[in-house]
Length: 303
Image (cartoon, rainbow, N blue to C red):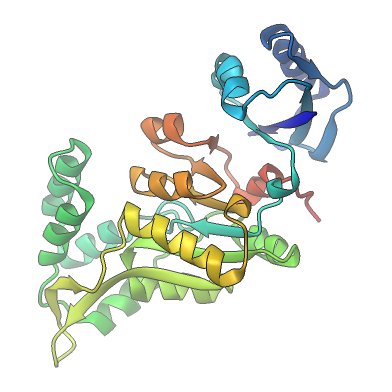
């Protein structure tokens, strides 16, 4: 017997029972005869419910998701997440991207405004989005524009502008209460990733290092390994090993294509209010206002 769980998370404060019944009936009419949709549902929160599906056949998660694709994409006000309902659903290592995930802003854009190079950075960003530049190239060109800035002053200015995403502090506290390890892996820069790590009491942070000269001025280059998609994936696997957590019990949460390799390496991945292409390629998507709803993806009830 294989059991799957379909988690329905409404974007409003409450998910009406009629909506859950509608989704459940739609699933019943969509899946093939190898599947049995369990009548009883479980409420995780007023806006989050689990629907259970069982199969006697050796059916893969991908096969079920393929059958439910139209249902998953049909609702604009409900996120529908399909997983195996096993012990690994309760994730124990959650790795987050920082920009537009744990925080609302993109740090490079805040720095660009501070350095008065917004137009030039935007041009580089557009080229990267058009696949004219890869992440390493775009990072190199952006950082070059920051040459001569005083790192301490920059840090003090920018950190005051960082706004943590709604629900993140509560989410982190509740995940930690469940014994989870939490990390931030950012394609941004170390001082800001460390600041967010401290604010949220995370276990680990990794980001790019801005090189400075003897006077504490930026040289316009980074030093060390660039934290790109491959680095994020490798670091996630290293953290699994270091913390003694099975790979299947890990999850990557992010909004960009740079996060997809780590989602593939992890046991699960969630595209958080991500770009359409990332939502299509990620194992799951979550487009709610508050990130506290991520708790229910992992089968945890809100305390």
